[in-house]
Each structure stands twice: as C-alpha cells, then as structure tokens.
Length: 274
Image 1 (tube, one colour):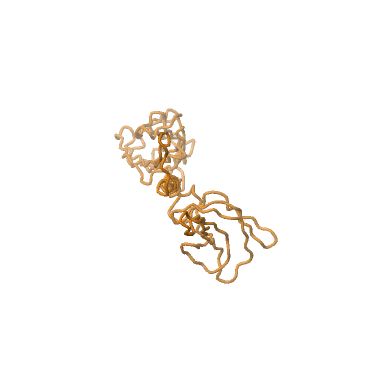
Image 2 (cartoon, rainbow, N blue to C red; image 1 turned 90 degrees about the vertical axis):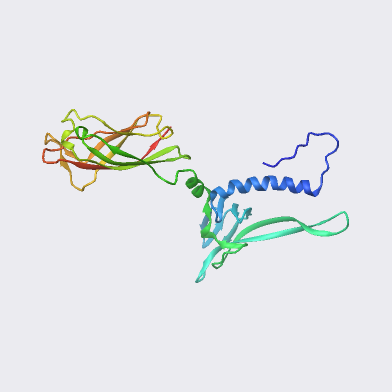
C-alpha cells in the first residue's frame, strides 16, 4: 500500500506529485476491494427502491463502475414507455481552480448519478439499473472453492463392497462444507443384521474440511420405491450418515431383505465447520 512518511524533520516538500501519490493510495485500495464484487456495475450500499402513487423512489447510495466508486443521489422515475428501461445516468463535474500563475483549470472532479428512463444503453456514463449486482453476490462466489475435491470409496466385499465417489468443497465466507456423493453397496447382504447395523467408514476428509462438532445428515435410497430391511419389519428410504471431528465420513448402511443383493445411496448436504 502506498504511504508517505511525514515524521521526518526539515520541511516536507509538498507538491502536486505528492498529492497525486496520496490520492492514488486510497483509490487503488478502494478499487482492489471493490473489484471483488464483480466486473460489471456493482451495488455497494443503499439504492433501495420504494413505490408510491405511481412513482418509484431510488434511495441514495454508492456503486462501483468502470474502476470508480460513484455516489448515487436519491431520485425517482415513473411509468416506463414502450421499449424503455430504468437507467443509471452518471454525470461528471469539474470545478475550476485558479493556479499561482493565473491559469484556470477544471481540477476539482466529481461524479454522481441518478436514475432516468429511456432506451437501454450501456456506456461510460449510462447503464440499465437492472445490471446492478449486489457486491455480496460475486464476493460470495469468490469466497468459495469453484471446483470439487473428490475421493474414491472402495470397501471390501465383507464390508458391503461399497464403491463410488464423494465430492466436497468449502465455502470460506460461510465456513461450511458442501459434500455430495453417490455410493453403491454391491454386497449389501454382508452388512450387519438388524438391529445391529453399525456406521461404516467411507472415507476421511483432509484437514480444513473437518467440522468442529460431529454432524449428522441423511443419505437417500435414490430409487422412487423402498426396500425392506432384513427382518421385513421396516422399509428403507433414508439412512443416517455423519461426518465427525476427525473428518471421517460414515454411513449407517442397513442390511436389506434377502432378495436385494445391493442398493445405492445418494446425498448432497451443507455442513457447518464451526
């Protein structure tokens, strides 16, 4: 980050160059943060809309557009004509300053914006209000993994012969884990008989994807119908599943009726990590 050390003695040589350097220091920081909200028009604060007696009022606020933070002034619009949209109009201004040599320049710059109604136009000074995206949308997308991590599941036949893949990724902003998978037990008759069915270890998630508390979720028998358990007293549609604090993913597979040699389960859930 740019900064100037003002602690030295001797008289600081303040010139336009130093002032420009200070201006760059904060504009660069603002831009670096704002672009996390997306490349297009980004709503930072305010600009909520309210409707009364045929008139819509857009409250004041701030938005980021084309590398600049722009103040939006409270303004209104009424009924839209055919083919018209609500537009955000940006107005640049330049107030004059007289320099020591007597020359005058439009040096005090500002940009503000209001709404208007007209044909859809996107330019340096105008864009449809509908294009404005809240900052948190893209910021949230940037705050989570975009690709899935995966781990293959393969247990021996005496343990059900479970195969498949478990996928997982992390949302850093929400500090949550999304985990999904489709697993098939080809040797389901080898699971422990009721009521002694126990949790079976499917995989272990790496550090950083492990919750601080044991968390339970449901895995679903993916076919529309159900299957009987081995005692013929209950129907299987959902089974309990869990992720513990050491990242172990467990599923409480249930032994089905003798006529069912194998069955599959699927799950897709979000787990808090804190």
